[in-house]
Length: 120
Image (cartoon, rainbow, N blue to C red):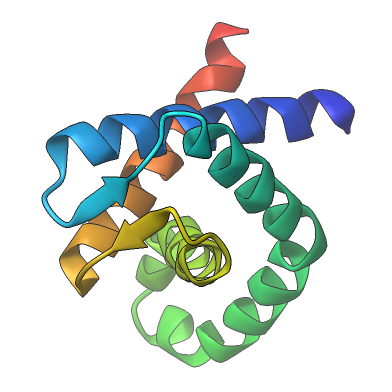
């Protein structure tokens, strides 16, 4: 559990830092803020992520039955985007402008969260 939490925090921190450099519309005003963003995102994922995943699983069920599960391919991306939006509103030195910037950053977090456990 603790290892998963730490890996999720590292993945979020690295992805947000990289996104602030390459994705237009993502701003991290201080480099130390990336650490705060990582911790806040990981805590939100720990405390709210399970509820969000359960609600989205039920909401997406009819579409999943009709399309043989295709909505579940973007399920993690949706959860990360919602949690990242909440993190953006909680932290003043972190700013995401626009839907596509939010989705791109959530995609980077999803890729990093998938990749880091396979490395460590």
